[in-house]
Image (tube, rainbow, N blue to C red; front, side):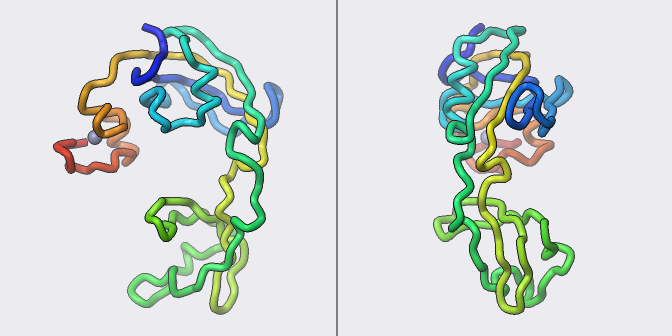
Length: 181
Ligand SMILES: [Zn+2]
């Protein structure tokens, strides 16, 4: 089967920074391949474009420049967040608030995003909400390990069903919509 819209695609890959000889950033092996529904906006558009039409067993090598990947580093994505936001039951978790830590947060519209602690001040924390790979060129090399039809449930939930995803806690539904993953 070849990759096209609404197919469930599994791939293994190595992600390097800059180019094929760059620093290894991420290695996804066959034990835990990346599995996603193709063409529904879950992945970088240019990433998907480079996989279009590939079949099971086919390999791929392509680069994405920073514009095609996670965009430039944006200066105003570095903001001071009032320290009260970080209080749980009125207390600050010192283990969480350490320079360099990534903290999962939510913006005013309820979108999840990760912020990196840059500086800890008395009444505010300076957080960097740029994507860790912002401003970087990426190079992917890998192999398509499986292409299959998505089930109607997977398409209506917008994510892949399978035990790997549950173990990773990637399934947001947690039983809603009849999804028991
Ligand atoms: Zn589901």
